[in-house]
Amino acid sequence: QKEVEQDPGPLSVPEGAIVSLNCTYSNSAFQYFMWYRQYSRKGPELLMYTYSSGNKEDGRFTAQVDKSSKYISLFIRDSQPSDSATYLCAMSITSYDKVIFGPGTSLSVIP
Amino acid sequence: GAGVSQTPSNKVTEKGKYVELRCDPISGHTALYWYRQSLGQGPEFLIYFQGTGAADDSGLPNDRFFAVRPEGSVSTLKIQRTERGDSAVYLCASSSGTGSHEQFFGPGTRLTVL
Image 1 (spheres, helix red, strand yellow):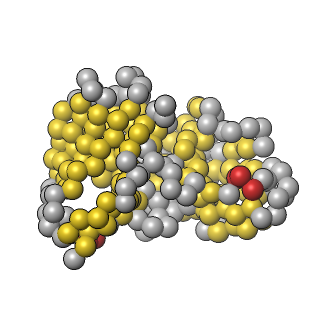
Image 2 (image 1 turned 60 degrees about the vertical axis):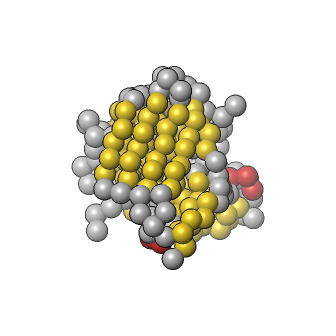
């Protein structure tokens, strides 16, 4: 079993839709949870960063962490074509530790 | 801008050759990370520097891979006797190393071993 599992997609939605992206993980020691966005031939960029369980909202993006279920989610409201990218969930044990990434979900938002 | 830069952007080499990949982190960032990303996969951790020292090199796949950061700024990832399986995008990231966890990634070096 991989440490972090994520449905690779591809996921295709119409503009304006709500997108739900999810990951599961196996290591209960993870405390820091992140979502990165990666455009083609670019490095990942941090979207959301959450410590421990709970919700965090930033504009159209909401991140949820459920440590009891070892499950994290990212919701994108009012999706835009510019949101088309690969979304990587990631997590680490400490704030300065190596980050373990999921394989990424490819998202296309169709105008 | 003053982001993380990596050179070269693309490197094509032949099996058995030696390659060096360079990373220039954001000025003042004390932590530097190397990752490797294969097609359709997320980045895979290789090594982490705090200052000049390797704080965690548990991700280096074998002794053909080595990385240095002699002055605590620029880092070089060195691969000896390259194999076709080494073909991937090598990503470098840096962070301030104090409190903030955000790792800022460079655009990567695409390594192709023929």
